[in-house]
Image 1: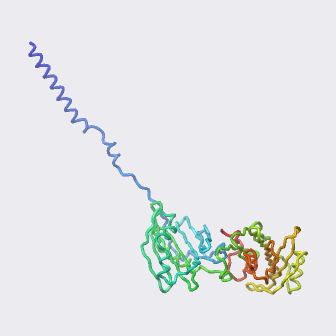
Image 2: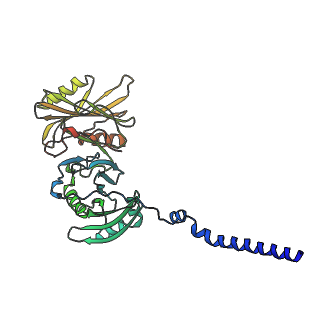
Image 3: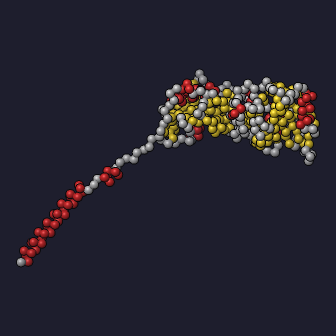
Length: 386
């Protein structure tokens, strides 16, 4: 009896185990596969939207004129590209023009190297990996793809591919060495589908860079003040600051405790001779001792420079020079430069200190802008970039 019961128990156990093993084989095949399939799907990478290149490049005209805040050069640029980040580090004056819709940049600058490159090979050597890295630091990565020494143009031409946020850009850098040792550089960046646009912008920008001959040989690091409304321009040391005024009103630019430049226009006034020049300064400064009066010609404008001196109520000496330029419409353009705590004739004394040298040179840099092709009145400069 016990034997038959044990046999029956074993049979039931075997049947149950067989059933469990069958279920183990069947259930995985019946389970939904969605989770495992989703886990191996690759994540889609968003692609940047690239604007189509312009169909008609002839419609891009460089009709706008930009005067660099140093007043050392002008460059033309097209509608849609806006001037940005002008700079002057004492050896290089630069400005960029950016078009956010076209994802394009035009960059122009002039270098004034202390030791100019002797030849194209020396010029090319200036643009090594470290120098180029600084120039392309805003991009995620860059690589040089071609470099040519153009002996006909006396230029180094370098082509690049740039990457920024998964977008590929093309760039070309053209550096031209001039006979006087300056280097004119033009760089253009466009999306990779707009090579024709790149070449067109580059050619037009290169052709439009124009140095201001009035200020050839003057200190590179100095700033400029320009007013089309008042038809005047002047350069001044970079540590002088525009304190007040602007186009159409008197302007005061001050140095660090030493010099002051004052600019103004006087309507209905013409200075015809030395006596009139003396009388004008005497009326402007009744306590002035007139030192020297000399005739001057400035960019087609004639007039007089008058040096004078006086003392403050505290007895401190003040030396000054007023440049009086007759302009069209019986308007007198006046620049007065004053230096504190020096009793000198700014027209005849050989300068021996920086403050006197700067003041005398500022007076010589005051000019009319007639015929120079500077920007129109609605684009008058304010204080120059540092």
